[in-house]
Length: 217
Image (cartoon, rainbow, N blue to C red; front, side):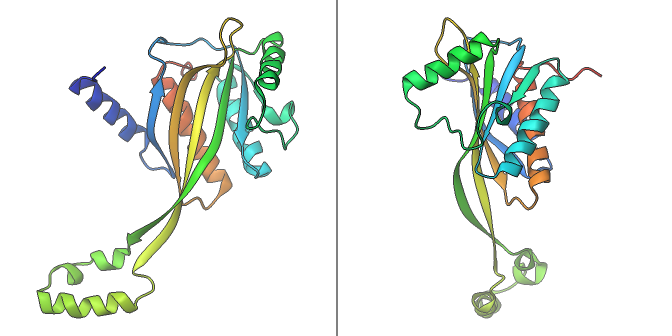
C-alpha cells in the first residue's frame, strides 16, 4: 500500500521534531496498522546490554516515566539474572517465559537492544571557514596539501544502532509486535546523558503513536 504524500510529510515532521537537540535520533519506526491506541497496565522493561550500569539506569528511568503515566513497570534486572538473554532461547523456553508473565498480569514487553555500530567521519569545522571556501583552483590545490597533512581534517565518531520493540503479551496471540523503532545513539560520551536522551525520545515517540498516555501534570 502506498503512503499518501500528506502522510509521508507528517511522518517526516514527526521524526524531525523528535530528534531536536539530542544525542539520539529516531531514524524510522513501524506501528501495527491494526492498532490505533493501547491502554497498558503492566509492562516488563528489558534493556539488553552487557553494560550493567547502562542497563540499570535505562530500565529504572523508563520505569519512572511509565509509572508517571499510571503503568506498572518492572525492570528485567528485578526478575532475571544479569546475564539473561532473549536471543538463543527455544520456542518452548520463550513460551514458558510468556506464560509466567501472563500469569503475573503483564500485558506488554518493551525490549531494547543495540543491533550494530557504525564509524562515521565528518569534515572538521575548521575547513568550513570562509578562507577555505572562497578560493580559486590554485589556492584550493595548495590548501588541499594542508588538508592531507592535517590529522584533524576528519572528526571521527561512532553511531550505535539501537532497536526498541513493544510486544503485546496476549493470552490469545504469540508475542504480537505492536511497535518497533530504530534509534541512532550518536557519539555517546556519558551514560547518564545518553540514557536520558534515549528514554525521553522513546517515551515521546510512544506518546505520539498513542501507545502510552501523556504524563499527567
